[in-house]
Figure 1 (cartoon, rainbow, N blue to C red):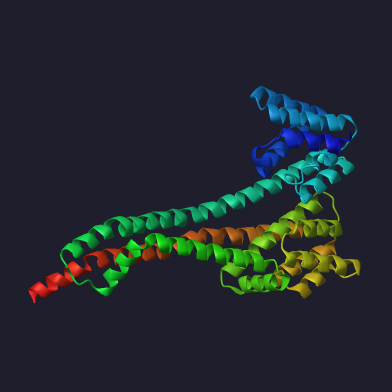
Figure 2: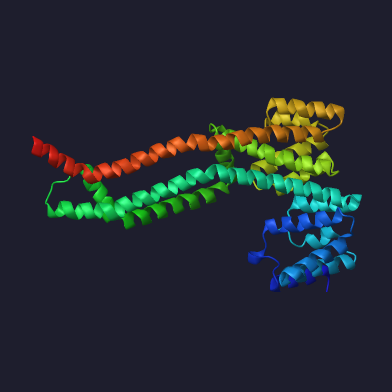
Length: 367
C-alpha cells in the first residue's frame, strides 16, 4: 500500500483534529516543526519529538498521526509529499513554500516565513474582531432590551388599557399588534433574510453578476476602500513571502492565482501572468489593470529597475496595513455614536408608545 492510501485510510478512522481538521492546528504544527528545525535537528527527528510530546499530553490521535508522517519520511518521501495529503489544513501557498524550502535546503528559514505570514493574518483577524466586538455587544443588548419591552411589558400595558376600555393612539396600537403577532413577524423576517441570503449567494456564483457586485462594493465609500486595502494587503503579503522564500515572480503569481477564491482575482492574475510571459513588465501590467494606486505602481517600477522586487512588496504591505489598521480603529468610533442614537430612539419610541395613552388621558383630564 502506498503512502497516500496509508495516510488517507488512517485519517478516515483516526482524525488528527476534531471536526476534520482546522487550519490553526496546522499552524501550530508548523510552528513546532519550525522551532525544532531551527535548533538543528532533522525533519524526521523533529517529527518524532512532536509525536512524543503528543504522547505525553495524552493526545493519542495526534501522536499516531505524526508517527504516520514520520513513517512517510523514513520511506523516502518529502515533507511536501506527506503534508500534501491534507490540503484542507495546508493551503497551496504553504505547501509550495515547503517544497521550495526542501529543494533549496532552506526549510527552516522558509518555515519562519510561513509563521510570520500566519501571525500577520491572525493579527489582522483579531484587530477586526476587536473593532466589531463593542458594536455587536451593544446591538445584542439593545435587541434583548427591545424584545423585553415588546413581549413582556407591552402585553401588560395592553391588558391594562383593555380593562380600562381606552381608545388607543395609532402608534400604541401598532406596537401592541407587533407584540401580539411577534412570532409571525419574527418567522417572516427570518425567512425573508434567509431567502435574500440564499438568492444572493446563488447569484454571486454567476460570473457577470459577481463582477457587478464586486464593482459596486469597490465604488461604495469607505467599504470599497476597506475592501481594496484588505485585498492589496493580503496578496502583497503572500507575494512578498513567496519572493523572500526564493520563488520567481511568475511562480509566485501562479500560486496567488491558485489560492484566489474570487473569479475576478483569478482573472486578474491570469492576465498578469500572460502579460509577463509576453514580455511586459510587472509595473506596466499593473498600470493597465488599475488594481493598485499609482504611487504603489511607481514603487514597483523603481524596484524592477533596481532588480529587487521583494522590498517593494514589503513596503506596500506595510503602508496598506497601517492604513487598514487606522480604518479598523475608526470603525468603532464611527459606529458607537450611531448605535447609541439608534438604540436610544428605538427604546424611547417603545416607552413613549407604552405611556402615550396615559399622557393623552392626563391631557384630556387637565383640559
